[in-house]
Length: 424
Length: 171
Image 1 (tube, rainbow over the protein chains, first blue to last red):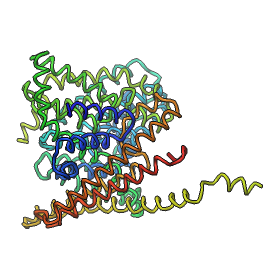
Image 2 (image 1 turned 180 degrees about the horizontal axis):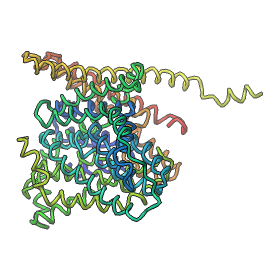
Image 3 (image 1 turned 90 degrees about the vertical axis):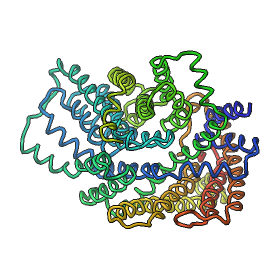
Image 4 (image 1 turned 135 degrees about the vertical axis):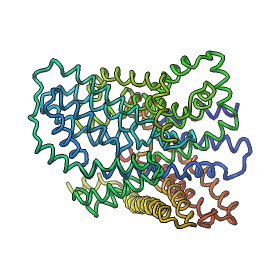
């Protein structure tokens, strides 16, 4: 009963636009007081939810992404990719995907990728005669690679909520991220095949060498971050710290980041971090209450009366998460859904790491769909193209993305192969 | 004449004072947030260095970094509320007309203020109860660890109160 009122209160507060963290904190505290828990438990649980070593990777990876954006890394990667693929028809399409892959190794947020890459790629594609709709659609679709490929902010958040290893989740995400890149490239191939009007550039070894050296420093970042984690040299948090220092040195060396920019960079990163971690604090409180009330067990038995088929369950989960991702931003969607769905998934024999990849991929695809698709809004604001137009551009790309989602959902071997190989 | 009109259009003096104080508070909060992030970076790097150099007994760096993240989260919560930068479920913005939206905003600020007040009460209780306990590695008094989130909730509550009374254009 108390739990029901608490749930309704959370939804009501969310709807009237109380910030998500407070919409969870308030009713949860009401529950604690009503059930006579000791004074201070609410604040202690919220603080404990943030007091975690793996979560320290969140601010540090955000910092890496912010500095990479300011340092003009995307420009350098773009030039290099262009000199590599320039003479292929539809080259800018492949360049777009390639730069997303390159940037995804230093950034873990789809919105940051959309802001950083959208402003370079979409104008460049339009200038070369690509339709704006295609340019915006492909750019939006390829931003999904960023938060799937490690490092990934949503993956760290999932790992914190689900209590699984961040390193294992990172390793599990590598194959799906490449699958996304390849399927999008196949899509571009079929789209560009008959369009002879698309201009191509001449290939030149000297240009390739020049752009390679300009991008070489940036391309070393994934070796440090992902190589360091997968080789077992660093924990993800340590790799984030080392990566942030390296990116800082790179930005200062390129002279695109100046010492006087640093206070602003650190402040902006702190603000972005806090807007995410306060929700994690609130979710720790909610998680404690859900566990105390044995909610996951009740949900599990309710679902088991509907179906005991793992495939049906996974299809239902995918549909639910896609819908959730379309209306709520990923951190909140993760903290609201994972504590309830994961225990059920485990009962169906789904590996928690595999479930994490499924959940994150669903929510990232949700960022591309209205009404609340964050990537659509960011791309619209950086390019001046309307949100509806961007979505019309994205819509065809949902087919390859959903195809990868299907494969990732029903072929756990593909996902769990790399973490198994690395012993994570 | 023109001068008087301009004077009339300016917000009243108390509002200007509040705005000036708020700006100073924001600068302080932002600076503390940036410094805590810097502390996290430095402490994590110290931890990495210590691990590779096989020196022992530096567990306090990890603990202090974790506390820094807790403090950072709550100390800038007020800044985020004042600038409407907290993550929220914005669907209502597209559905309701401007005037109804303003009413909903006020209700939401009242609720946030009440929630913050409740958490300040929690915090005071917790600070009181934990006054003899110290953290395991860095030996920081736990009452201090919880003091900063309590202050953060208080600052957020003040922002919510200002939000209730703020005029349309500044809300």
